[in-house]
Length: 368
Image 1 (spheres, rainbow, N blue to C red):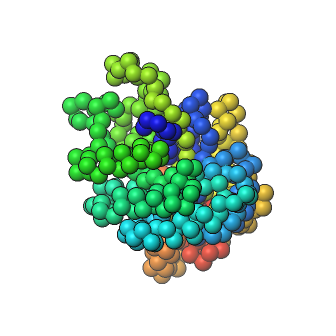
Image 2: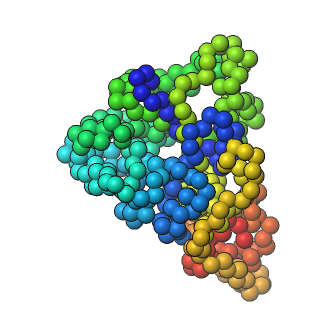
Image 3: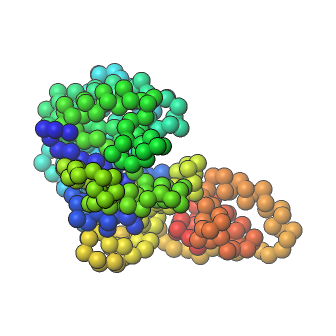
């Protein structure tokens, strides 16, 4: 985009950030709340600050979260869920959204809102065009409402898109040959032009883990964007690296055990922290080779508890099978799956785990 800042937000699994240490402008994280055990927002904000995470992407604009972010200095992207896009086609309702969720917090010591996400991956193929007609009008109305409120120069509306909005032809599968999907080319071109006119960023969610997970032959250089540093050797292009900064966002602050597992069980386990704010593994977010555990939450949100065993015996287990299935329908039992952290448990321990999760007694550690 010419005439303004060009930023692409890239969603990466936690272990992928250090590849970007030389080109990243700031470190951010998705703060999702689809969990049965949620940390206090004030505890989360302090944890972000303690770890030098200075950007956060929300999926709504919930009041307790926004209040906790006030005065923190953390850059924030608030969001309008897909099911509210149609409502935002009414300019009056778009103005009310901006008044209630943006300008309300726009004061000295308020929330440092930088972006408003209009939907989340609304052009995803799996949605079968459900939001095709409502996304762009909603984007226009929100940006125009921001402009009318006098904050449009510093707060931009954008549409986070899934990487499936573009692709390369099978006979020339390289990035330089890429273009938007044929079925949404007109809409995406119109959208990008609008973003450019308003100096707003094009936002894309990219998941290198899924690319590598689903295709053994997927080029690692493309997955981690190392190709940008050596494009001529890969594509034959002599073009310089793309202009502008790249803001990298971790795809998950903590475990979200209420998320859909349609794409895979891993959807609930993207988080770099456990439910109680304890780091899951050592990692380097400084770009300085400091592979260490992140700073945990200062206030432990939930106590750790051991799994309570079920009385042994085949007959008892058989009687409980229906209850176990019920428990795992409404609670997260993905750690019991093949290859997962609790896969090695016996039948009685599986039952114990399921009952604890559905009762709410198990604090939801990522594993047993």
